Length: 77
Image 1 (cartoon, rainbow, N blue to C red):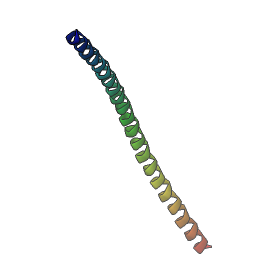
Image 2: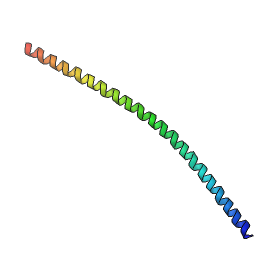
Image 3: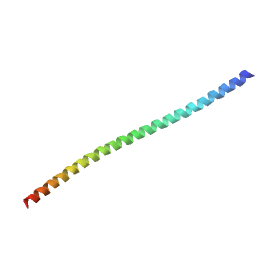
Image 4: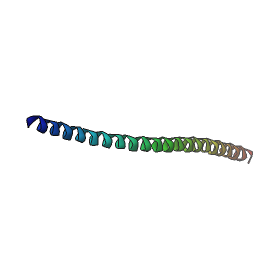
């Protein structure tokens, strides 16, 4: 009788482990999907940041050129 009880306990423990492993696999898959999404978002933000840095540099150069022109006009007057 003890062997049957031990067998049932082992079976229950095994079933519990099987369920837990299944849950861990699902969690792992969810995390992989989330990680892929976050990497795509990061790539998008990196691209957008580079674009904004470039635009900022262009504007800075235009403002510096305007300041230079204004100063030269001031000297001419």
